Length: 463
Image (tube, rainbow, N blue to C red):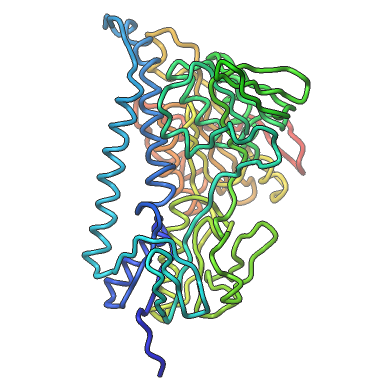
């Protein structure tokens, strides 16, 4: 029987890779993990966590505006960008330490280096030139922002990675993209006092989300003062003599700003990984092809997370890692479950959503009941803020099962987590109606919408 250095070697120290390595180590397996940058991956180091901290920081401008409505007198305020960066870096360092400690406590050997495959059982550690062997190999290297090399002047632009490390807060910024990363950063920079323009090639932002949410958020962002330019893309970016940037749009308009941020999607981080040496197949985008159990075409090589281009969400990568562990080491083949995944967009106002959009549901079910409520949340009343909240439930009329729930407004992300349980359990609208309301809360609207706002039959709305 062949002897290997490790029972499992993990390439990539993000959320999926760390979870798989730590739990495998806890099973008594000999586990190694290689990470070339910092433990925690995109989410912890340059994604969800620092972004959410930035979201909190950017909300204070509205908190200060609303304070007089509640009797508070707020004096002169000032924002210190370097102080925010320092505080963010300190927290990221703390979290990275926890990731490392968890691995060490599980007996995992950490290699601080880039790693690549040499063969189906061999991994080269580039920092030392050492080659180690492993019975099973898990690839969890995630993805990276698209750089748009075809754009003249792309070298002057930043991505979400760079946005977390700017020396100075720009006075004006252009963000290209219409997905959740572009939308979130547009709201962040605007909230911090930056003149913000969002440029998107589509009809309206957040493709793939329910149309009511898309319309509501786009209208609210515009009302706040964020400029949104649709049906346009950046044609060229150039640097002026004064150091500022000029972004030329396809209609000829030129925007003069301090930063241009590209948020036009992400791609799997497979370049230079040695996949060809091990015979691992990829698709046209470079994503690793896997079966229902996250196994590649090479039976001892597996892949989880964004590198597989399935569902690009941190909890999904962790779920895939746990299913991998069941399949590879516990003799319990387990497929990841991608049905009814709750998700949030930390825009301002934020979005929480789970299940089917109205359009998706109309394609699947013959008749729908749509329940919709739009109102000013209590928090906005005394300050005189006109911003509204929107809640929407989509019900299959035949079974009465709630197949979609969509919220935009304060606390929407937190609500979507609990709604995820309800929809996963296939609760009916009758279950919602039978649930006692918590008053006074915005969430009580979810259980007090007794009559449908409209019906959808065979894809057509019936008022």
